[in-house]
Length: 302
Image (cartoon, rainbow, N blue to C red; front, side, top):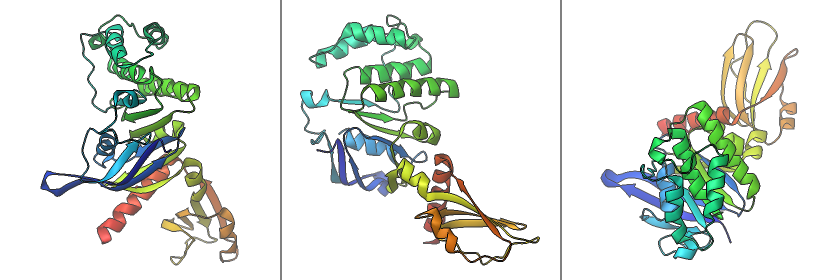
């Protein structure tokens, strides 16, 4: 059974604004999947469809084998969710929120919740409205993971946090992943560096469509920056490389971004005497920007 599965998931809003179009996604248990895309790409709508908070125009979504539209209390207790704009009741403390949420679970451990809040540097008896924004997001994550869900869905969980607060937040999330390797995590964000720290697989959304989905290490193995250095003062304009997405030249140096089956494929490239090839790895952020810009160019040409 898949932890999360969608088929042809589609949702439009008034004025024919397509938010999600034909989303097919299949995540095995234990997967850490990062959904990337610019603001407005459809990430939040996709997660709300998965959670049963929006009804699709077409297609279906299942979490742990069931539609969240029809999931019972027991099934929902196995799934944690933190929305992008979650507002915890400011007058309630973590202890208050824990006592309230504990009514919906059969094995809620209030004492363990209080201990974990203290371990994360939060006062569990203080109203959450007195917390910093970073601690409010930490409190939301704490309440979501405390029941030990089999599936955890996070929508822009570190949105609005400064670099230090975001790093602390991600450190806590990484701790949880290491403690619960059987849990499936689906996280959306436009902070690509955050995805690179935690994800095993990544997906890229653009204008409601999932344009790319791959294992992170496979993607980084395939995407390379290739530099060709020619003798002399200029480089020829006719250079073609396998899987080339774009190229630019400056003086005797041509730099290309290529998607390669393997680096060995470049060994057969015919180059002028004295020219040399250098291959460089790319960060996930560089890959995302290159693929996104390439998709934008193709869309503008059609």
